[in-house]
Every structure is written in C-alpha cells, then in structure tokens.
Amino acid sequence: GAGVSQSPSNKVTEKGKDVELRCDPISGHTALYWYRQRLGQGLEFLIYFQGNSAPDKSGLPSDRFSAERTGESVSTLTIQRTQQEDSAVYLCASSLALGLAGGTDTQYFGPGTRLTVL
Amino acid sequence: GQQLNQSPQSMFIQEGEDVSMNCTSSSIFNTWLWYKQEPGEGPVLLIALYKAGELTSNGRLTAQFGITRKDSFLNISASIPSDVGIYFCAGRLGNTPLVFGKGTRLSVIA
Image (cartoon, rainbow over all chains, first blue to last red; front, side, top):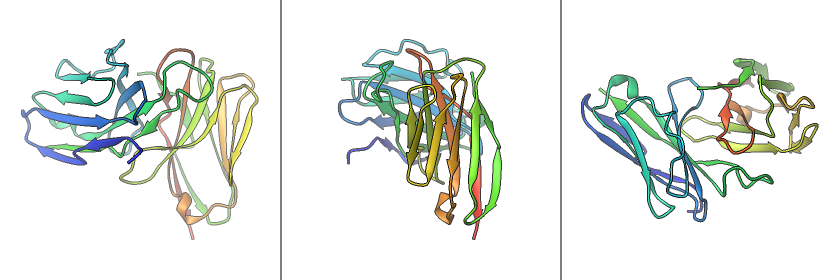
C-alpha cells in the first residue's frame, strides 16, 4: 500500500528477551520517526532519522533501545533485554522532509506495533 | 520530553453538540497539526496550520493557529458517533521534530 507499514502488529515476549520492530515508510519520505505510546497516554518521541542519520538520540529511554535505518527506507527499532515497563504501542511515522514549510514535514503514521512484555 | 498542554483531557458529549479543544505551549511554533487516533490505529492527520492567525476547515472540523503562535484550537461541529477517538495536537518550530500534546479523549453519546 501507499501508507506507512509496521511489523509485527503485535508482539508478546518474555522479560529479558530482545525484540526488533520494523517500519516501512512511505516511498520517497526522507524523514522517519519513532514514538512510544503507553496505554491511555500521549505520544513519547524516541528518535528521528533524516535520511539514514539520527541526529539526536536523546529521546531513547535507555541504552537498551537502539534504532537504525538503511537505504533511506526501512527502519528497525531494537529493544534489548526487554522489561515490563517497555510494554506499549510503538508508532512509526514518516514525512517527505524535515524542517521545511509548506507541508513537507507533515508526519503520516503507521498502525503501530503493540509490544507486551510478560 | 517536552509536551504541550492540551485540554480538556476527556469529553463526554451528546450527538449533535459542538466540541472545542485547545493546546497551549510555552514557546512559539511555526507549525500546528491536529491528529485523530482511533483504537488500534495510528494517528491520522486532520488539519495542518502553518501561519499565525490561520483558520482552516476540513468538513465539520475547524482549527486555528493562534495569533501569539503559542496556541491552537480545534472545533468539531454537530458531532456524530464516528467522531469518537483521541485528538492530539502537535507543534514544532524550525528544524525540530513535532512535540505532541497528551490528547483529548472524545466520547459521543448517541
């Protein structure tokens, strides 16, 4: 489809295991964003990519979180040694560009990956 | 991280009523966006605002970019059951990612 896709849609894992979440942005979108949304809460910004580079990683909650993007396309968010407090919906968004006016920085969201850590 | 003040947190209204929600920020923005999120889905963009004082409509939805550049409101006229969801405001200034409000949860009673 033409929208942002994420996989898996649901992930249940045991505490201490590593998980990898995938985001496929809209084709041609150079900027990509990851957010975390806990149950009943707003969106918590994690990290963004301009191309394949992540200029600011300070939003990542801990060093167990990492993200990469390749080919200015697919991005993966990896959580190592998962903890129960990592349980949340992880949302990915992409935009045509970052920092330009006229709508090119409008973010379009994927459906999210619901992560449950037992 | 930084968040906008969005109010109210939740609303219960009768079908047919008008709805108003707003966001305020301590810093100025040059972009305000309003998103709606339905259960199990990602947020969907409703209205984008790029100029102070701008008033934009999308069907029954109307949003304004406050003249001070520190606030925005969203109005929904003649609400219907499918308006149910969480409405998020988001803003940004310059070359930085969007900052999101915590959302307004809207419930419509038929």
